[in-house]
Length: 193
Image (cartoon, rainbow, N blue to C red; front, side, top):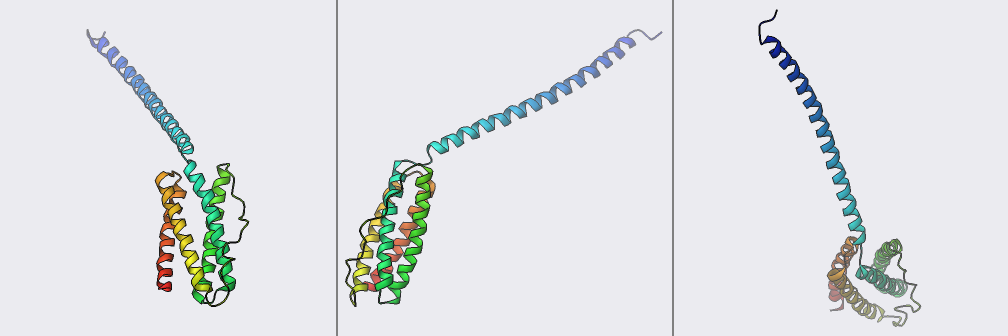
C-alpha cells in the first residue's frame, strides 16, 4: 500500500503533465490563430492601401497635362521635321533628330496613360508648325528662336503640373522636361548670341 499522500502526489503530477500538454496545445493553437489574424490584417491593410492608391493614381491636372503636352510635343515634332529638311547647320539637323525621337517617346507614354485612365488622346494638329519659317540662310536662326519660345512654353506646362498633379510618372516626366528643355534653351542661347 502506498504511503499516505503519494497517490495524491502521483495523481497531481499526472494531472499537471496533462494540463501542461493541453496548455501547450492551446498555446500553439493561439499562436497560429494570432499569426493568421495578423496576416489577414496585413492583407486587408494592403488591400485598402492598394484601393486608395488607385483612387489617387491621377487627378484631373495629370490628365490635362498629358493631353496638352501631347499636342505640344506633336508641334515640337512638326517643327523638328521642318528643321530636318531645311536646317543648314549640323547642330540644327542633329537637334531636330534628337527632338523627334525624344518627343515621340513621351507622346507614346502619355497616350498610354490617357488610355489607361479612359481619357481621350488629342487628335493630330491640323496646322504644321514651322512651315511658315523662311527657307535658306536665315532658317537656322529663325528656327532656333521659334524653338526657344516653344520650349519655354513646355517648361511652364511642366511647372504647372508639378503644383497640382499627383500621378508619380507624370511628375517625373515634368521634372525631366524641365531639366532637358532648360539645357536645350541654354545651348540655343549660346548659338543665338
